[in-house]
Length: 153
Length: 153
DNA sequence: GTTATTATTGATAATTATATTCAATATCGG
DNA sequence: CCGATATTGAATATAATTATCAATAATAAC
Ligand SMILES: [Mn+2]
Ligand SMILES: [Mn+2]
Ligand SMILES: [Zn+2]
Ligand SMILES: [Zn+2]
Image (tube, rainbow over all chains, first blue to last red; front, side, top):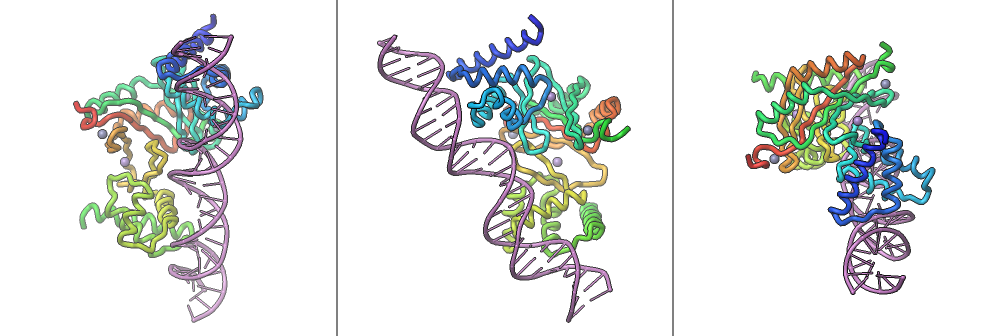
């Protein structure tokens, strides 16, 4: 099995566990949305609208509200992350592994998103939090500006 | 003159300059909102609704749309910053000085906001941007979690 | 397998923050 | 003061998200 397929299976188990733990139910729609999401959106940051328009092509009967609710379910179960890049629309991306963590550079011109991670920053943040006795649940870091294509450098 | 009054005068000049540069007009309402904002909201992060409710007490005739538009004008002119703490409401805070820059720790329980700054993080960010030939216009950093009061440590 | 219970679906409507419209009014250069 | 133009404030529109609810699907109990 490829590493990609392996990770997808792990995500499926995480979701199934969450569903049974919360006494929810597995459904055709959730399976369909799961496959679409983890097959086509690794490393992407898709809005609900975009995702809905694409999944509708192969599954015309699926409802908009169901897509909304299911992506939210993915977030709650820990297999997806919800992002806000400041344009008023929620975006979702598959979480790649348990402890993976990254941040975003967003081009205000073309909209492209670049990911980065930096352990030194993470360390600073933890120190700052500790100093203020702040119990960190999450943090987000975004750089907004022009990507190399758009700034013409 | 106190340093606080001094800075307020500088902000007023910045706004006046912006208004004349963009061929806008000075109005009673803008003056009233300016005074309210810089007298009562230094170091605060106020929503438009909150701000409107408070200013209405002394100036009942002022309109909601005017408050919205004026706070946006303050942002455009560079004397106020717009923040998004993830609760779906825009927040505004007075900019304290030209090159001042800070970030936020937000308690998910009590809603209190704590500010911090860290030059090492800023340096890392600039390096990362340079490495990716990314032309930084802005960046935001937020820590979400429980403050010391709410985590009971 | 049948039945009972409970969650889900999908169409629609409600909500919420923000943006726009527009007629009346205020500002400002000349 | 006059005329041109920007602003105001009430109302309306927009856009993303969330809630409602009757029909249906999934699981549990028997
Ligand atoms: Mn990402
Ligand atoms: Mn602040
Ligand atoms: Zn770009
Ligand atoms: Zn707190």
